[in-house]
Amino acid sequence: MAIDIKVPQLPESVADATVATWHVKPGDKVSRDQNLVDIETDKVVLEVVAPEDGVIGEIIAEEGATVGADEVIGKLEKGDGNGSSDDSDDKSDKKSDDKSDKKSDDKSDKKSDEKSDKKSDKKSDDKSDKKSDGKSDKKAGSGEKLEVKVPQLPESVADATISTWHVKAGDKVTRDQNLVDIETDKVVLEVVAPADGVLAEIKQDEGATVGADDVIGIVEAGGEGAADDDVGGSSTTENGDSGEESESSDDASDKEVAGPAVRRLLAENNLKVSDVKGTGKGGRVTKEDVEKHVKDGGKKEAPAAAKSESSAPAAGDRDQKRVPMTRLRKTIAKRLLEAKNATAMLTTFNEVNMKPIMDLRKKYKDEFEKRHDTRLGFMGFYVKAVTEALKRFPEVNASIDGDDIVYHNYFDISIAVSTPRGLVTPVLRDADKMSIADIENGIRDLALKGRDGKLTMDDMQGGNFTITNGGVFGSLLSTPILNPPQSAILGMHKIQDRPMAVDGKVEILPMMYLALSYDHRIVDGKESVGFLVTIKELLEDPQRLLLDI
Image (cartoon, rainbow, N blue to C red; front, side, top):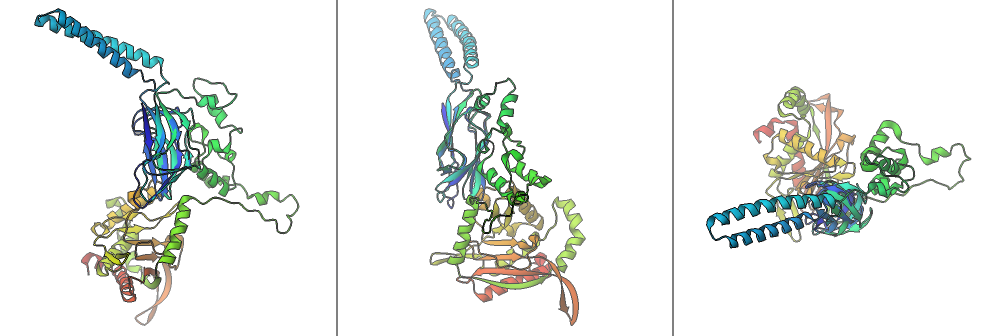
């Protein structure tokens, strides 16, 4: 029986997603809960896992396809792919029932009934076991076809793009193996194999736009892999070595061994697929392979530099490259522009003496790390100070909804995190109930998930106020842009020694600029300045955080 592989449900604010990477291909055997495909939305990557053991029968939505929630992106053939086990069970059950009924009718006494029941049960069990075993061994690879589908997407996400297939047609897959990555505006969703088997067909190639529940592939449950057959002119061996070598040969096209996201990364670094050794399935080049190659010094010179031996180019002849924007980058661009055009944004500044916090960290950082297994950074103090200031200035913790002002009586703080895919703002929930250690651990976990592309839609949703720390990149001063529908965002910056007048004397102090951008439609100047001064006072006298004063 074919099982649909579907795009999972997405939050209301996300209308569609993109099939980022298939980790299996049609014909691959998969096991239950194996990651089949990554599906990407605006900010997070979702993994779609196999619902049952079986074989990938068909991939309906290829990598790069845009898909919606509950869209079928593939098919999974349940079981071992032969579909004969159930038949043999039915036949054996029928035989045993017929025999036991016949014998019990012939004998009238209770003893004969018991005898016939035992005898028929034993015979039918033996026969059904032998019969089903024999059939499943004989017909392995001819099982039911299961659909690989795009998981559910939120109401506001209409479609997604298939980013990367991690398998190809004929590859064996295991249940829950990631088959394909689907990219939406903010996240990458993984679609996994619904069962062990073979990815029989890829219906949607990388770059295709798909919707929720779109069928993007077919998995044949229990089917035999045909990866070696895909390589023309190469002989098939038992261990598949020749197939793998052929797949990684120079004759293989870029599309076969690298998804669109990887090809884009290669183009940005002036590399070819053949320049990078692939460690993925079948020699496939992954993002990690490219990043490692560049980190190890394998980055090639720009094409223009290679022309040094030739004559100088004619005036006006300029080298350039064109790279398509990712869905995340397009979404960031769109929303930043909306924030500028749809709000009355204004920024106010202040500065804070960070010496008290730095002295406190220096004194207790080793003991803190030993006890809480996390580093004592600055963000724990920033979040604590912001939470206290929000309690005192509820207008900053409010938002506009039509003609209404919504005051939030909870404190969910969005933390701006830089990831390889772009800037995202995962949410630290109920920050007012967290200790500094809890905050540091929470931010660390969100940063790691962002780096690995594992942020979920739950991680990204909500948030009443945003903190962005450009100081880690050396920013001395900036005017951060609002994160709608939030009404304010706080920018922290580089801590720099500066001469300051203290009690009539000049002292060198570690100073940091604070920048609060706010929506002047809801927050007045008095509240914005008071909010920023409160943060300054709390950071310059951290004991206030403990005493709640």
